[in-house]
Length: 175
Length: 283
Image (tube, rainbow over the protein chains, first blue to last red):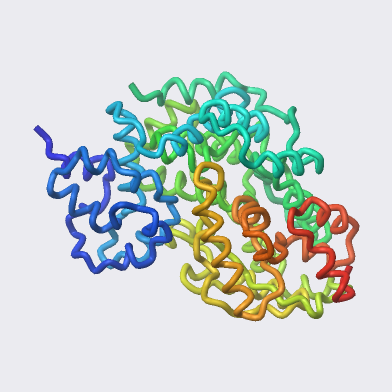
């Protein structure tokens, strides 16, 4: 039976995360710690302690914006941003879902839009997100403003070879 | 004539159309011939890598393989697309097993023989700041921008290999070449909140308000960017009264070079920059 630490390290496929010696440069530079339950270096410790449920069910992993400040500054080259990607991917693959539901819904709406047209049509993507999240009215004024300025068109050029795009989605589909 | 392939990305055809139009206009004036990549598709941006690793490499790989049909550099104005292409390139070059898998998924061979570059890099290193200055007919006197590089053009440094990841200067140099007074500040590379702008707007507003406060403290009257998401956040998410005008650097380059276009682009901004520019006699 693989430990949570082994599982994460295998997926990160880089420097083993237990090289972290908690200098906290990552957490000091992370722009999202104010909103997170756990600092990035604490998440590493939690993984080492096998606290799988606590980590995968946290809002922390979804609030990471992948600004890559952590890996840039880590003296041991631990790829914390990639670790956060892995934790998100694992939460999805194992059916845990996302504590921050709307963040995942945004990603799902975004990817569904690529699958549909090869390129993002921002208007239809936003409509899809709003229907999924139930957040119908925020940014209404901004949306109308942008629409009037011609920045949100309903129709935009698509990729012609949609077959190749759909094949990519089909072949990388997570079970 | 410098010939490069061009990957605009999805937002440059939509909410960042001023960036696309100003990049094209400035490139024409500087002798850069842009050839759009054939039948490109979305790079996957943050949503792919947040949820599915192989998808996040396969999507940009499709475009990298298409780009390799021409042996010329690829200009990628959007910082997110730039970062995704550089990341895909990095993984494909360092992991042969992954490369084989991705090639099978995408249906093509990846050679790794075209360079992915952002427009600041191409303008500074291929055209040169002197050549840029020589084309300036309306120096941006009185404009005091802070350069806002954001995250994805620079980090991680071994992937992006562009400028200095903690204290970049190339955008500042471009602005100086255009006659503006680039103000030094400590927030050049602080995150704007990125794609959380839709799902966690309050957090982004807090981050943007802080950037605006720090810009003012540095003596700036505007911010300059090279990323569609950063621009959208800075332009639209500041609290009432807290915001400063935000420009794509190519909008200012076009203005300084006396081109047609800036007036129309500035109308598209949410935080109207025209009073500032008219007040300085630049517009």
